Image (tube, rainbow, N blue to C red; front, side):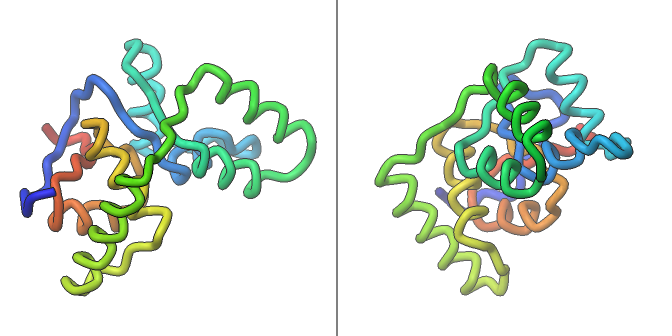
Length: 148
């Protein structure tokens, strides 16, 4: 976790999709036209590796109500590999969170862990949460951008 600057990636091989994008993609009342959702759709159609973690699945299940939504999320996530953080990921996430705090960047515990998982597995973060761009200025996190 060196002090590398933000790495932007328009074309990815493997991408980690954050709760913010999945939530926008799963809205039933009005599917989102957010650029991150369009990017996710293109990545899925192109057969790119899409990964996430159990915390993202949990946040989605907590954010949508009703058994039908619950079942749909579980069904759609059945093919998405879930990364499992290990002890070192938790330690490195705490170090990252502290580094960000010293730099004046507020990052939650879960977001710190998600950023760490991306770095550990060399994944590009796809998120509509722009705070990850600031986090990337403190570490080697690659954050998706539609700009090459």
